Amino acid sequence: MSSVHQPCRLPVVAYEPLSVLLADVDALRTAADPEGSPPLPKRFLRHADEQSVVAVRAVQRALAALPAADCSRHGVIAAPCQAGRIASSRTLAQYAAGGGVTVSTHIVPQASLHALAAAVSVGLGMHGPSLGVGGGPQALHEGLLTATALADTPGVEGWWLGGERACRRAPARRRGAGRQPGCDPR
Amino acid sequence: MTDHTPSHRAARCPAAITGMGMLTPLGNDFASVGDALMAGRSGVREIDLLDTSRTLRQFAAPVEAIPDLPGLQPRQLGKGDNVHASRLERLCGAAAVAAVDDCGAAAAAGRRVGLVLGIGAEQLKTWEADFLAGGDAVFSGARQPCIAARLGQALGLSGPCLTVAAACASSGYALAVAHRWLSLGMVDACLAGGGDIISPVALAAFYNLRALSRRDDDPVKASRPFDTARDGFVMGEGAAVFMLEPEAAARQRGARMHGLLAGAGMSSDASHMVAPCAEPAEATRAIEMALADAGLRPDEIDYVNAHAAGTPVGDAAEALAIRRALGAAAERVPVSSTKSMSGHLVSGASAFEAVACLAAFSRQAIPPTINLDDPDEACPLNHVAHQARPARVRTALSNSFGFGGSNLCLVLKAA
Image (cartoon, rainbow over the protein chains, first blue to last red):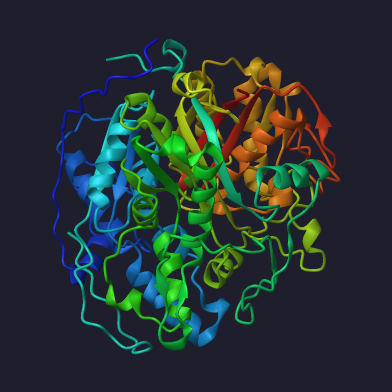
């Protein structure tokens, strides 16, 4: 047995670029599922991070173009940039004002680095590995590097790799001003 | 289509663990942690290192002290007179430096060494620490490299450095990715592991989720995996980082090996963003895949370090998954949850529990599940309760199951 495995080729069979302004993300939460895509559980995106909303909708659109695809054995690698920043800013401001009782139960599952990948897996019924990668400015490159490593995972029939060019720097704001930071998920 | 079912696939070449470093509630070196695990000593206590006045929780399993790191400049957080170094970065950095020292710094020199850290909520914790010290990074959104990238630079690593996140399975995924990098020849050696810290907001979030034990009157008894009276987990913190390299290369240079990372299996429940799936088909599959990746049969496993955090649904589902995956061998294979002593290290749990498996190899004994006074009938396993059990331990399975339905199982072998 060789100690070095050969990397396998990864043909890209579907992709979907989706550019959304922050102001339009809420409409995406409640939008109808694209025709031909797996439906989401009811109100699934209600508490999802903005980047998760965009990612789930992008994968749904890509799947709609592959109507015969069974994604139940797909894996997800998501490489968001500063995911969860809006929810974190809100949570921290509330915590400063009211203490631990104000902390949302959604902050950890919906605003951590893995949340975007988990939202795609859970929302669309994908049982392959699901993980977040990076989180910083080089996130998408790191996602590709991780996908290369995990490509030959047994039982996984396809991978969704997502990255987001988000977090356009917003003007500095004062603490406690009650405003949210800018974010431009693309 | 290529048949990827586990039974048709050759086992992956093991990765040798030639160095390890750790900072944990049970000690900051392998000997101390091994002693604590085998003595059934709890690391849970009332918290005094945090200002908990604003949180509802008053106990956890903290790391006693994080050493300063000569040569490393951890990120500074906060504003004014309240600036301090990132605790999470210092924690992971100290473990990584200790792992390099343990394998012999010369062994890393001149080689392409990578770094994979499993940290589930690095930015959340960093924003929180900065905010609580008067900073406004969460509002400004300034882009900064992740801890893995900064540590890689500080340690002079020439291989890829990145962070992976899969909730409580994060550091297990880090080990799996590093193992794959070695298999593909992308690195000569790789530091891999992960860590997490207790923070006021995280503590409050888990409490509000009703995921934490509320046994306020007796913290040491609060973490009780598989027990009928379990009511949630106890939060812990800590980091463990390993130096991995191909077994053949390690043997060739005569390196001391703590053990072997033999395989990993991973899957997702795709069931719920928080709650574990009571029907553990995917957890079972992750265990089966890990065994296949390692080229082992269920009856060749000597010990199972369970994820079992002490949550009512999660422990029962895992017990069922273990029984299904191991079949008849489940009657014989001893099982314990070291979270009963360490608390739940969240992102760092998988790496810490790999340390526990290595301790079982070196001590030839199974660490116990403490506080297991009344094993739940819904968790019918060969429990090692209260006291360590001497045993021949050459192989171990370590489970990690996290939020979002992440299932990650590792198989380790004695060297």
